[in-house]
Structure formats: structure tokens, C-alpha cells
Amino acid sequence: RAETMHAVQTHVEGILSGSVPANRWIRLAAERWQRDMRRSDLRMDWEVVDRAGGFIQSLRLVGDSAGQAWRLLPWQQWLVAGCVGWMLGDLPRTRMCLCQVARKNGKSTLAAGLCLWELIGKQTPGRKVYVIANKKEQAEIVLNTARDMARPLPDTDVLWRSIRTPWGDMSAQTAAEKSLDGLDPSLWVGDEVAEWRGEFIAKLETATVGRKSALGLLI
Image (tube, helix red, strand yellow):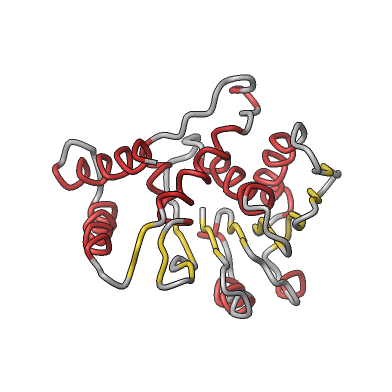
């Protein structure tokens, strides 16, 4: 736990000092992080962050990196902490996260890891995980990455277009009005959201209001 906390805080402090290259928006996020760490009404649950990071790093990498150990980079540890660690009272504070990095920097792989943490690692019943994009083929990139990672895991059925576990399931959807009707996600990943047309993000936000804990990840 201390190692994770140190890695995240060192990364944030590096952004603010200028030793870690960052644009204006990343610096603003780092400043907000430091302010939030001082707030009395918020707390960072480093135990959950450590568990989530440990679970994600226990998954096997796929594709060109197949067989290699997964070591989360500092920016990835920071993102995981922001997604799963902040608590406001007894409830998770973060309901939506925006991850914008250049192509081929592992955001789909990290999104797949977070999906499997939600679906399997937390071991909480009633999980509904969706990957959503304009085209089904795009949404299936994260899904298929998660499918390959999940194959060795116990109590996990890796099907053609979904993953089923005792705690819930994961599938891909298109960003269309009808396909999003009736969804009740505990975690949804919006892929290539810059290409979305319509009020889909607002619709997904309202779809999660019935859950005390739900997260939207935009990549």
C-alpha cells in the first residue's frame, strides 16, 4: 500500500514541479488532486487502490506483449487511484473519468484491466460492464482484450461476445439510442467518444443513478 501511495504521489508532485512533462489540463488535474487530498470530507482508500492495482497487474498481457509481466506505469496507477480510490463518506466519489492519451499507449489494455477488476476482482454481485463505441467492431477491441486476459481466470466463462462470471457479465454495445435503452451499468467504457453523435453520455449518466457505485470511463 505504501509503495502504491508513494508512486502516485511522486508522479503528481513531478507534474507540479515540472519534472514530469504535462500539459495544462494534466497540471490542473494534479493541482485538484493535491487540494482534494487536503479536504476533510474526502479520503483516498489506498487499500482498495492497492487491491485494484494488484489484481490488474496479475492479469496476463496479450497481443504483441503476450507473456510479459504487466507493471502499471505511474500515470496508470494515478488513473486507477482516481477511478476506484476516492471516497465521499461511505460512497465512491468518482462517477466519471476521462482518459486521453496518444494512440498505442495502452489505454484499451488499461480499460480492459479496469473492466475485469469491476467484473471479477471486486467479487461483488450484480456487476454489469459495457464497452460502447460508434461501431461494434471498435467496442469489441476492449472486450476482446478483456476476453483474452480472462481466459485463465477461475469461475469465468469467456464466450464469443461476452464474459460471464458469478458476479455479472461484460459485453459490447453500439452508441445508438435503442442499444442503450434499459442498460444498468456498474461500469461503462466509452471508446472513441470524440466520434459520438447524440446525447449518449447524458443517457449513460442517468442509467447509473440507481446505483450507489457506478463509473463511466471515457477513452
